[in-house]
Length: 268
Image (cartoon, rainbow, N blue to C red; front, side, top):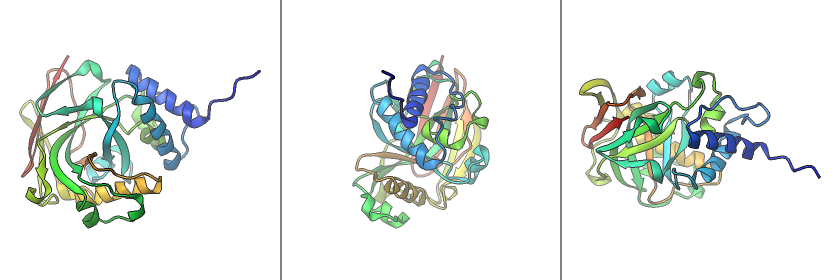
């Protein structure tokens, strides 16, 4: 008897997850399984997360929000935010050393991260910056790790990028600061330095006007899919500085006023 056909969502998720785990370049997906829009992209993304859970990536511990600033929307040519997963196996503390060999081409972004103190159930949508702020327990400076794992990302369609977590490859987190003790996140300045040379700076207001507006966007996006932000999850709210690509031997430091600094070294 003929074998049943694999549903397109599962076939796409298998191809994406297998490529990421193997550090293989992800080519354009065959049209028959390629997600056609953002809704189908997020369905594939959820299936990718299930497959990654059994690998070195481990369980999902939060989210990143991409394309929340004009500089990143211009860089990537995408006019709206996108959500992606963060995973236990790719979470690091400040001062970490990562291996360039563990990526196809590692890069970094300068981020304001938050950790949630309570759930934001989907029934609360639509959310506002003020309402999501009530759920934030702490904030911290963070480096987002990204990876150019595409045969040609400029030719890769947006739904596929979303399904593959939009370059996401991990995070390096600074020390948490209680929200009550944090500065005005719209006013903070983030600076990225590589090998002691400043390569970019931006302000918190670049993130949709305020990082909590990005968090509200994510809460609404998840609610539309029947999901929600949960207590304990980490969320990277969007890069203040254009992505910078690294090579072995690079030393990275990002500093955000009032939140402190985060350091990273890249080995062979």
